[in-house]
Every structure is written in structure tokens, then in C-alpha cells.
Image (tube, rainbow over all chains, first blue to last red; front, side, top):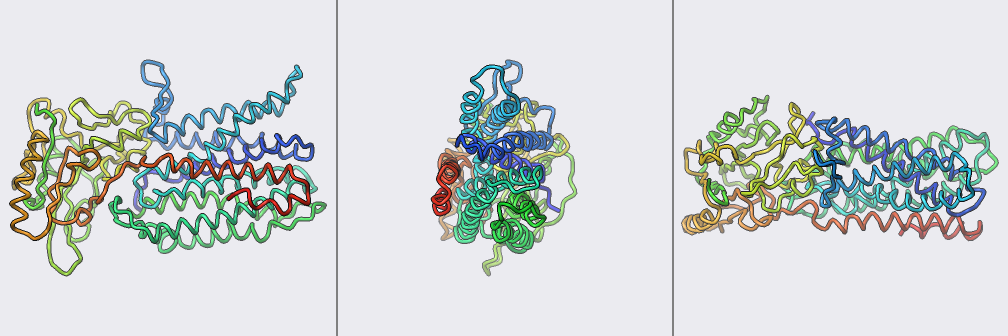
Length: 299
Length: 259
């Protein structure tokens, strides 16, 4: 097999960063509504959010050619000054991840422990709002990083919206998953979240369709291969076609869309619901993995 | 040392002997790689972390049997993608304009590899860093031409001051244009604010496996950020509206948050 520069660890990082930041954004939004009935999902999301992002960063560091030099992305050698290159999406992303992880850990701690002084809900709200900004930026960065390259498949403005939509669906799916695991009754917020998810899935399908059409149709004279069509054909046909249509589109998007919407609030969480959530979460990973690999297979 | 150094590649003179390929390997002490023939006689297929220059063997599929050669390596752009995207500042422009990847700072994130429109830098698994042509900076410092240009037998490679090379290229262009009906392109004169390696191309750049209009990967970067931020904010707004609205209202009004 052709060697790839950015393989499985990078795909996992893009996925986990999106998942964690997506879950965080949903949790904070729920908390900001100040409604008691959403407090469970707001808390679960807060606890879940930091860990996938941390795991993603560890994978990203492990994927470096020189993992032990990772600190050079944060600190300038010798001087002890902070390293930041404003033109490098990678450098911007490193900082977004670092800041997001710090904020999401503080937010999770504030959710868990009751501070002795009475300002507690106010502090949590303020940190949540700041974290929300960074969560969105982390989610967007995963798409911008790929689109700011010379790769004929990745180089498009459609990639960031696709990744954003997918991050929110997998983030909320993870929240639903953990919420249902702890309770024997379906939480009243779940039907609402699932209805929201089906909308996001629809938009995601439209965005992916747009991605395919743009890449099959538009010639990019700036790319060496003169056209992006071969890479896209490899992604949806000869190379990753089955994985893409069956795995990502079929199981990852359409199956959860069809199966996961109708839940009686009084019913117990069913196996079919967990299966749908599983596919929804891992469809998001599959999408990133396929885009990453197909882009590097055909140049 | 030549001020403002450059190399002019006259592809019409290249015989495809691959002497430059060998000279580069020898001078820079680059290890051999197991490679395969590509197309008919091209070998290797592309540059790598251990192969910093190579000759493209091109057989255009247009009915006319021709064999075209083009030496490929990092073009040392004045507006270089690798310098722009490097998160650690390892890829940088030296005082004389040569683009170099500082091996002691490179963390091997491979962003430059994915960003270069010419495929110049490549990942070296042995060193764990990105590597590419360094314009034989060590030779240049000692008033010697780059190893590949020294080895070139056919006169396809001319090393010298970049401005002088452009004058030379225009003269050669006039000569070549008398021989063929094709317009001759001096590739690299203005591309990416000028590249230090320039090519005289008697056929379209894409035939020679070069991008017709190379662009920086971070061109229109704001558009890409906005393309993500706008839907992101819209989704959060949609969630907020949906979850704060009353149950009856929420059922109908949930779909417009994401557009």
C-alpha cells in the first residue's frame, strides 16, 4: 500500500476533536437555557467533552515524526516564548486544542464540584460561554486544516461545514449514549436531541452531495493532477466506494436518520437505539478517515 | 557566492540521463530506496524524503509519440507554502532566498508535505522529519554550483544569478519559438512571486506535471474559516431556539437553525 503522510491517528484526532468539542457545545447550550429538565444532558456533556479531545491530541503527538519535540509547537526553543505562526492552521489548531482542553476541564470540574462561595452558577456560565467559542473554533479547525493544503480532494470550502455538521451529530450522539446508559428510562431530552440530529444529518447529506458534485465537476488548474475528479472517483468508487456508500452514507447517516427518531419518552433505551447511535458516531469517523485516505491515494 | 541564486531548466535540452538524480544522492549522502518503474522508464515515481530530485519521463497520450523529460525538485518559491504553514518555524527562507527545513526544529508534522503545490518536501521515515532539496547550500557557500547542475551533461541546467537567468531564458525562448509553433512558457518567473528554479516549457505546464497556476494553500483562508464558523454558530443558535421554545413551537421550528 502507498504510504500516507496523515493516516489513522490523524483521522482519529480529527474525529475525537470534533466529537468532544461538539458534545461540549451542546452541553453548554443546554446549560445556558437554565432549564432544569436539560440539566442531565448539560452535565453528561460537560463530563464527556474533554477526554476525546485529549485522546486526539495524544494520538496527534504520537503521529509526529519526532513526538518528543511536540513542545516546539507551543514553546519557542531556548527563549521560552510562546510559539505561534499566524499563517499556519496547524499552529492555530494546536493553540485552540490547548485552550479548549483547559477550559473544558475547568468546566467539567465546576459541573462536578460545588464551590463553597455562592458565585458558582455564574462562573460556570461565563466559562461555558468562552468555552463555547473555542469549541466551535476547534470543530471548524479540523475542516480548515485539511482544506488549507494543496491536496486536490481536500482543497474546498465545503469540507469545514461537513466536519462541523458531523461533529455536532456525533457529539450529541455521544451525549445521548452516555445519558441512556445510566438510566433505565429514556430521558425526555433525547427525543428532542434526536429530532435535532435528524436535521443535522439531512444537512450533512446535502453538504456531502455538494462536495461530490464540486469535486467531480470543477477543474482545478492549480493542482498537479489538473482535476480533482480522479480522487473523488476513488473515494466514492474504486477505492473506498463500498465503505463510503454502505458505511458512511448508509449505516452512518441514513440508518440513524430512519431508525432513531421515534422514541416513546416512557420506553426503555433499546438495543436498536444504541446500534443507531454507535453507527452515527462511527460514521463520523469513517467519513474523516475515507476523505483523508482517498485524498492521499490519488494525486 | 552568487547573489540571488537560481537555476534555469531548459527541458528541451534534457536527455533524461538522470545524472542529476545520482549527483544529488551522492552529494547529500542520501540512502538508496527500493523503487519501481512508473509508466515506462520513469523511476522513481515521485520525490521522497530520501530522493530530493528526480526526472519525470512523460509520454503524452495524444497520438504523437514524444518523450518529454523534466527534472523535478523543490522550486524554492519566494512565497513558499512550506514556510507559511510550518507550525514550528523549521521551514524558513535563508538570507539568500533559499528555502530550507531546519532539521533540528522540524517535528515531522507533515503539514508542509501536504501543502506544497509541487510536492517538494517529503517525509523521511528514518529521520522523522520533512526533507527536500536545500539548493546545496553548503556548496553555494563555497562558490560551487549545486551538485545536480554540476553533473548535468546536456546543458539543460544553468546555475546563476536569477535576473541574469531570466534574460538568458528570454533569448533562448526566442530561439525555441522559431523552431516550434508552440508558445514557450518561462515557468517560475512570476509564479508564487517567483521561484528560484525556473523552467522553459515548450508545452503546457500540466503536460510537464506542473500546476498551471500554483496557489498558496492558505489562499482565501478566511473564506474556509467562515464556511465552518457560520454553520457552527447557526447550529448552536438553532439548538438554543429549539430547546428554549415551547414544546409545540419547537416541533415546527427546529429545521431552520442550520441553514
